[in-house]
Length: 221
Image (tube, rainbow, N blue to C red; front, top):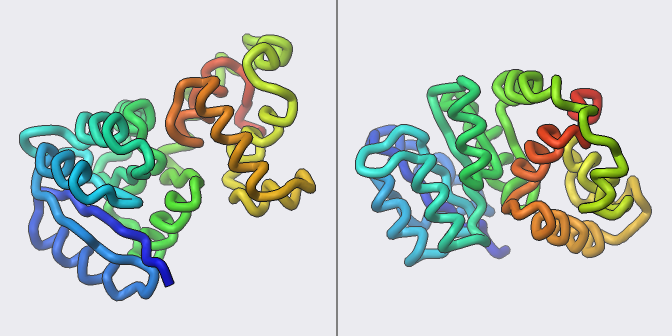
């Protein structure tokens, strides 16, 4: 079994080492590096090229947001999961805009965190439900301000369908089943969506679509 390679970045050694031990107990996960600050996280990401980087939002020398931005610029294939004690809107929005594909609170259970790592590795998005709902609700008033015709100037109809299903939290396999297409075709559509919208993750794509009015709260889980 090929294991998912994980980088941990948190300035609290006890939390970081405890999480490393717990994740390491999962058969399909392997913690390949640990960082105690943002600069070290960027450095290790460049060296190790992990599949997933779990980053604390508040760290010395370089914030988790800025570290995420630099990691995504240098290692676009590394999915970033922000794990934070804060669930306020600016943190969530800034993390998504920096390129994070997931945002969870530190009170999350290890089982849920492990599942989130696997989901991000599969190209899915994972957001704390309460934080995400507040963020998306704040953006909702602009929904509908742009016509579907405007959206279609950037995305094809099938790409819009894929984006709406992705916004519901469906996996690539579930989207493929829903649209009666292959998983590889779903992946191709997502790559095209990211390129057209100049984003790096489903989460960024959904945020962009909400701001543009292509999606509403009814399109979300």
